[in-house]
Length: 242
Image (cartoon, rainbow, N blue to C red; front, side):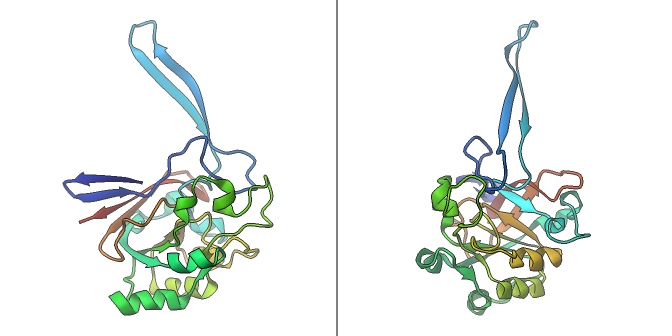
């Protein structure tokens, strides 16, 4: 987690680096690959370096575009820019998640946040703080299992169906969290994905530590790679504190 003081305020980086340690969904056959093409002095006497890269869409800090789970939904390149920037609303369930690794953020959790600080505004980007980021990049601790290609025994927190329906009704732009998926690990129907993405709301997964963010007051920027027709993309996500 990187914090930078700037003229606009305090910048908090919520993005993990993409490198050999980046975690991808267990069913993915490959991870992030960076190949060195050039590195060193050229015949002209100046230094030059260049690389090629290859990676699945969904891994590391990334965005799920609506089309990921909604036929006819927006691809990542078609998400309007104004929806990728918005007021951050943090719902902290880290205490509950520490006692139940399969905890699902409930409608009651979200309503309690609203009771304390007011209604979630339309266009907000809601961040679910589970405290899971401290487990990154230990695959077994983070996913609950480290068997290659096996998704049958995953354990980590996510969002409940009722919570997803409530956030969709609030008209939020996006929902993010510090775990591998917006659905909890044991999910087989990915209902939170179905509800949110079906409502045109994108998801941000594998966010780095959310602890520095206040419950309200920060502005979030979620800037994905603009992949034409993509169902998702690596994203640089950061918050600005005034």
